[in-house]
Amino acid sequence: MEIEILPMPFARRIKELRQGNLDLLVGLQREDDEQDEVVYIAPSYETLRHTFFVRKPDIDQLVNFNDLRTLRIGVTRNAKYFERFNRETELIMVPVSTLAQKVALLQKGRIDTFIHFQESALPLIRDMGLQDEIVLAQYQPIEVNNYYVTISQNSPLFKQKHLVETAVREAIANGEFATIRREHYLSLAD
Image 1: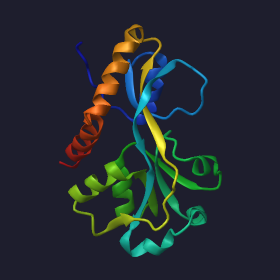
Image 2 (image 1 turned 135 degrees about the vertical axis):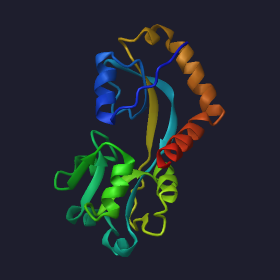
Image 3 (image 1 turned 90 degrees about the horizontal axis):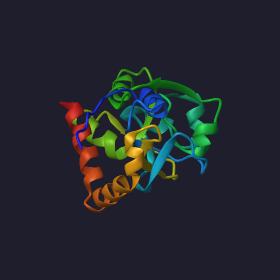
């Protein structure tokens, strides 16, 4: 099957998938068992924990969840993180489209922390030569999230859901999702 990969901000990806303009999307969390126009392919391909990063001189700024209430937090536009964080209404969130934007804003002091997957953020921070400037915060959430490959019900792939499920299981078994993540974020640092 011929594929076309379209880079776009996360919020737009979700909108395009729901409208049927994208056939397939990775990186969605299943929030409940209600089915909408998005079909979640089981099993989840990845389980990740969100991680907070800070500037090294500010490492003592974030030692517990309550410290977040006084900080400007870089987040990915329309992303979900963990339950307590998602429902907190008093946090000062600065939405951006990319991980590189979060890193740059933190480096420049425009935000005080950002939240992202450690597996993606650390390689990018290292490649940008900022590993001595941007570090893991002392406070880290313990919750983990499962991420799924999803198909739009409006896609021709919907009729081939069983083939997609088989391909996802094989890719998980072969470690292909981890390789794709690593290579993607390393390519962004070039």
